[in-house]
Image (cartoon, rainbow, N blue to C red; front, side):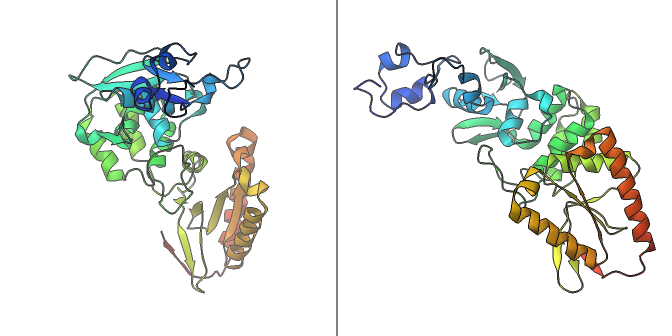
Length: 331
């Protein structure tokens, strides 16, 4: 850092931000700072022998900084979805950044490694957060259909907008709080965008969106069960038993009193979580419910076949059961 610089240099910043920090012209233009995008600067990687810069900053971080530099830029499409923390398929991982301008305000954005768009969004469809602009969660969801997402993938992305506010905490890298939207607001935006690319898939997907889903695998498992001919399970209902004990269940087949619990890696690696899961299973079994725990193996061909057998036998056992503790379903 130059002795004339007023503050330590941040890892990523715009030229205007650098000037406000008191960075000298030499520091901004000739001191070895990297230039990933026009008028954007990043400090060099810690180890010059390693090419870390491609992964040091996320697409969202680059896009936020560019939008702060140029207020006409709006983070949109896939990059907006990543910034909001929407559930996207792994195949969509890319180094490209999606930026838009509202049609009629300026030309289409043209930056290296970016995809530029014109959008016809209104004031309510663009949010200003911390100095950068981004399409609303609802508008972003509609835009995702143009990125060739399947109906099931659109459902998962839409479910991520409707997560319950008392569920898993959102990672700090994402913006917003749960729920990011309500279904009525999604329907309202979709109704205004009747000519959007992928509108048929969007209309199919919106009817399948459900509130209170905690994770992308829960969405996938719910849809897979319905496609397989099973009843649609309730998503994260709170079951209150007549004796006063209650619990949340990931997916519940209420008619058969079957509790499906999707287990992520932390359920097996954290002892406290594992013991809590075991206690829950014992309690619901004692009250006439059948707990079934599943993991990512259920999405393989063999895993799905095994799950179908387990579920069939569980239903048969529950059909033979003559008594169980009364319960109510809440949220």
